[in-house]
Image 1: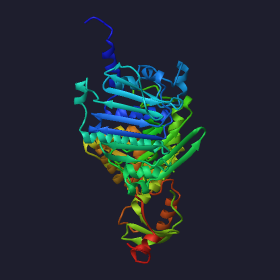
Image 2: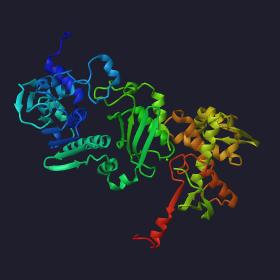
Image 3: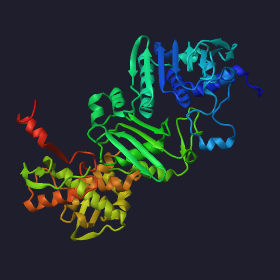
Image 4: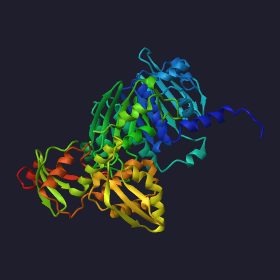
Length: 518
């Protein structure tokens, strides 16, 4: 086929395909336009999950009548003039593509009025073709009405999900923008039923309740951090509150909802060893940064950004604080498994195995960070013979074992000699530890090298920590509590299991009927 220029309607629909994937995409673009216009009230009405109608009304600055037709044209915007403006964008929109793209795949009308005008104006756009601007009565602000979305692109309609799924996507998006802009009053109506309504009073926790429910909102932990031109605010879930997927992880950068891999990775790193495998936190975090330090022009729907100082942002978001353990008074041991202690705010039951794992893990990683993991030679080398597959798995990991203070050498076919162990684990069974580690190597479906140091340290500590059912002396119990109090993350083991259960004085009094109902 010869090379040719695309017709305007084909190129418009290609551009629309990048910006308008589904009804929620339309709601996103129009909501961002309303926020850029300084709206304090945004009302969103949908019918048939947005297929039949999406209407977004705001009380923002409005669009002058003589600019309405230009507003619906491609690459027309009031938000930048020259290329240099792209590098200090402080608005949500800037490309001038949204209205043109939406108008090319729907029947769209724009009704708007500015404060200085006595009357408003309306423009209709059908399938990318603009009509004439008409004078109409209208309040200050803009009403953008999108009907019969994708009427002229039936193939796109086939890719939409069920009404329930598309409606959920719209509700989720608007609720997140309500979190980012708590001083704006949002209302979403599906037919005649209001599905979301916020007060616009700046209370983010009440919006969290609308998103997750009251019980979850009460548990969320508030985040406030400022550092050298960076600000991070919002909410994160405690380690006891998790989900089985990443859908509830929300990041905004300068008021823009983004799905940025580096931010999510920093978040996971902050929770590292605090959550069970396959569990994810709930977050609503808002990062504010100098617009000149972030490039928002790297994705068709502006869902991704690029930071000038990636490492700095990563470290800022990663830095955890998840609460210290108070000074505990030892009471005793139950079932040779749990240590009972009293704190200033109630009773603590400590899982001795999980607690010892955490203590060993932090000590070992501290030695690793100092590049100084002392080894202790065994009085007599321990010889271990393994099945062929296990021996092969161990061979690939020998450098890492040696790095962590083990001295393991080949000693014949499928046989190894353990000559030394980390001094931290002096007294442990080297044969048991080696066999257990090999079992972990074989069961792990992901390469150990991906997070080799932390994974290996966690494995070693799990195998060599004191076990449940092991009687500890009073001195050993007290030493374990003291070591746990000194840990940076004392409340979970390296694999995310809790190290302790706290029963507050208030909870105990309720249980015994001394204060209020149970």
